[in-house]
Amino acid sequence: MLTRIALVLVLLTVVSFAHGEIVYLNILHTNDIHGGIAPREASFMNPDFPPGIGGGAWIATYVNQVREECLESDEHCLLIDCGDIWQGTPVGNYNSGEFMMEWMNSMDYDMMTLGNHDFDHGAENAIQKAEMTDFPVICTNFTTLDGEIPSPIVPYIFMDIDGISIAFVGVTTSDTYGLVDPELLEGYLISSELEAVENALEEVYAQGAEVVILVSHLGHPPDSERYTARVYEAWDNGEEYTKDFAYNSAELTCIVEGIDLIVSGHTHVALREPWVNPLTHTIVVQGYANGTGIGHIRIALDTETGSIIGYDLPDGEEYISLLHDRFWPDMEQFELINGFREIAEAGMDEVVGEAVTEIPRGGAEHPLGRFMSDAIRVAANADVGLLNRGGIRAAIPRGPITPRIIYTAIPFEEDLYTLEVTGAELLEILETGMQGRRRDMEISGFTCNRNQAVEDGPKIEEPMINGEPLDPDAVYVLVTTGYLAQGNVGYDIMLEHDATFVGITLLQAVTSYIRAVSPLEPDNITRIIWIDQGR
Image 1 (cartoon, helix red, strand yellow):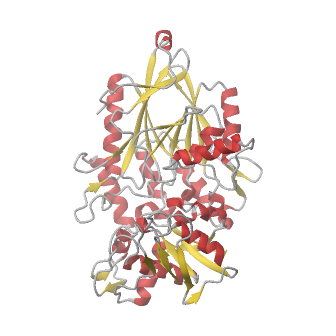
Image 2 (cartoon, one colour):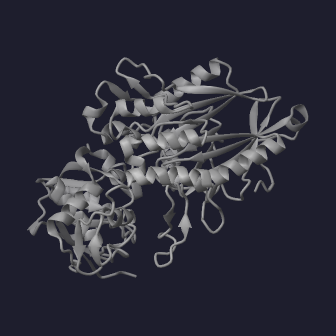
Image 3 (cartoon, helix red, strand yellow):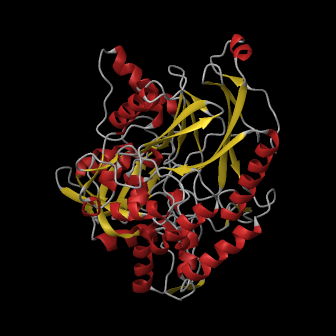
């Protein structure tokens, strides 16, 4: 597995090789597992014949192989998680993450930071789960109102790697404070990641750190250059770059010097190759989500200079998709996880409704998307419901409907949030889903024409809210998932509005709606009418 490829040199002079010994540190990393330690089908690769992918037993196989090879070659190996460990599956959600903590202990993780979803059942639950771990939980910006980090969580840890002092600093997104029910965070604060990281770096360097690795749940965007360009533009104008919401890792690496490597999570976007900030030379790695794979970077350290002098990717790409036709499960882990499933998935085969015919999904707007957006609008008593197409992963088949079938369709158990917006603000949000050739919106309570001939600027024409013309000055309630409220899939504009937790999940809303309206038939009336497709 550890095929040696050419070492990528990062700001290295040949002389440094002559002065010290080179030691290697393999960093294996997971992020946004969301309880996904049971194997799944990769319907996103092939919806008709999906291959098996991921799961905790397959993660264990890769980790164990790398650990064994590191022992044989006298290299170092760490297993790190970047947060959002439990929210999303029956196993993950059992007792608000209890089985996931047991699994991580069985895997001998070396450390983790907290993700925003790790606070979904409150700060006290996050602390309680940290108490269950056999490894450090690091997070520098989760504090009490007095500024103290609650035990057993710590802001950072040090490790000595062949005489090189490496500090690992944990950080989570400050957007957490607006995405979790405020009552559940009472007495605690998720402070600014920028200030917290700057303070932590000052402390660890004062304590002798030679290399700093940030274990981050800030997220790395797929279009890094767009964000770094914003920073540079502000500087060119003689201004300080500031934001009203959380900084992502691309922005952070411009502003904060002294971070050698960021191991990232949060945005569910894998980097097949590490991203390196051209200004500060900080290296960033990040994986996909839901236990489908694992990241692996091998960094080279110079014992003389106490610095990272390069890296390589032992498997050829930084993120390894754990496809079942390539990897075999670790049977001890397989049995452990099956034991979790027997408990957590009890009742998953209860019949909650019936579909007269298949409720299909597909490209652009589709019947299942319309049904589920109706479900969340009704559950939240909102004017408009909005979901992203990518979160709906399978059709509802004809016949009896069970929670297991619903989970298959919406495996990301998202919390629901409402935003109170004016009609003008609502149009601005929905235009996000109209730009370019975006087809990533499933809508309820809203109809319009979409003028595709308009290349730039507004495309929405004749907007209607529940059959009435949209009033730009009226206040409407929009309900959506935490995923979109966090600004994902291009909906950055959501972050400009306060989000209020509804108190239920997408899964709960859809299940209740199925019980109420069963038997189900597909709605074939399109809500967004494309006119003049353009060129």
